[in-house]
Length: 318
Image (cartoon, rainbow, N blue to C red; front, side, top):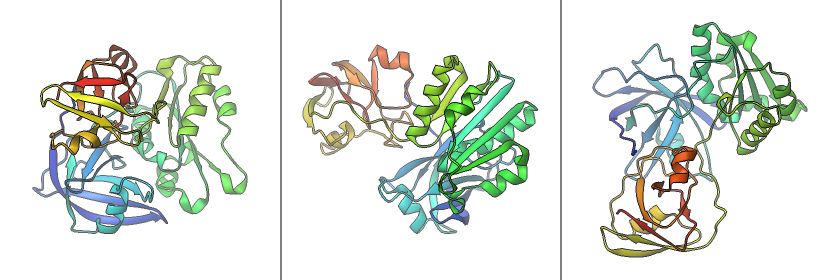
């Protein structure tokens, strides 16, 4: 089902340089009202202008809704949103912020929760740890980064969760051994991972090797998976009566935007659900992180910002 978001005109009230390439932004609503409540692990979308909108995990406390905070890592090879925020996101800058969504929720079950973060993947764990501390359950964070000066939010973690945090610095020859970590966990431990795709894959593989149930394994990544099919294909827009070729290096959304067909899409990373489109014929290659496995197998809808076609032709309800 297509996600619907409420948008809130907001203003940047503070900017902090946390590391050489990460800034923390504080936002307040222009109308002075509080932001909506959110659960641990939630993210929001920052709509900087008509062309740029990115998803970021909330790092501010869920106990104070007078403001929201996110951390933005400058990505020179990204789609432009992070570069825009680092350049233009100064105090007083106005933008729109979406209502929160959560694709990385904490399980209400489990006597122990192990959180594994790599680099900027630390951000969703800030609210996770706040909630786990309030629950009074056993939890621990394993945070890997390349060098000490790039450890985002480490001071905050040490202040609030000092005895729950273990760090691993690659430059100092102290890498995180995911296999060893997972093997040492007691039965029923819930494992959460956010970071580079290689870390996510290694964690899932280790959990599977040690027979963790699927419901004990949780991960989040905002970037879309890569396609196994690098070929061009044809898309037929049933309502608009258009046929368009989608090139090998092009998304469906990019191809149909040139036809002036209006499709809402907030994230362009397969995470928000706003571009969910009904498939009338053909088979999609699902590359998003929004639909679950059963929904992908049903082949009823797809996210046209990232997903592609397995069949030579796709007919969409557009």
